[in-house]
Amino acid sequence: MPKESYIPRLSALFRQYGYDGATLSKISEATGLGKASLYHHFPGGKDEMVESVLCYSASWLQENVLSLLAAEGAPEERLQNMCDRVNELYAGGAEPCLLAILQSGTGSDLRHAQIQATLAAWVEAIAAVLREAGWDAAIAQQRAEDALITIQGAVMVSFTLDNPAVFQRVMQSLPQVILKQP
Image (tube, rainbow, N blue to C red; front, top):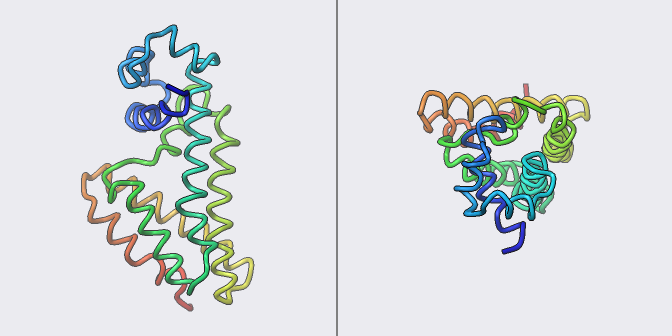
C-alpha cells in the first residue's frame, strides 16, 4: 500500500492519543505495519508521520471547508456550508480537534508553523466572506478570528463534557452571529 493510505488511520490515532501517547506499538497496530515497514514508509519516524498528517489535514480543510467559503453564493449560505462540513469533521462535537492536540506535547514547536499556516488560511477565508458581506477589513479579520475561537472552544467544551449538543448549537448559529450588525 502507498504511504498515503495510512494517513487517515494515523490521523485518528494522533487525534486520540496525541503525539506523546501515540507509541510505535499503537501506530503499528493502527496501520497494520511492523516497525521496519513503518520506517520504510516514514523514514523520519513519528515526526514524518505527524507532518504527513498535518499536510493531509491542511489539504482536507482546503478541499472541504475553504473551497466552500470561496464558492459562489450568499455569505450566510457559504458560512453555513462551512459549519456543516466542520460539524462532520468533529463528528458533531464528539471528536476533538487534531490540530489542537498536536499543538501540545513533545516537539510541538516543530509543528507550530504548519498548524499556524493552516489556521491562518481558515481565518483568512472566513474574513474574505465577511469583507464580501460589507465588513471593514479590520472588523472582518476580528470576526473571523472570533469565529475560529468559537468553533474551537465549542469543540473542546462539547468533547470534554461529552455533550455534542453544545457544538451543534454553535454550528447552527455561527453564521448569523458573525454576520450580525452591531
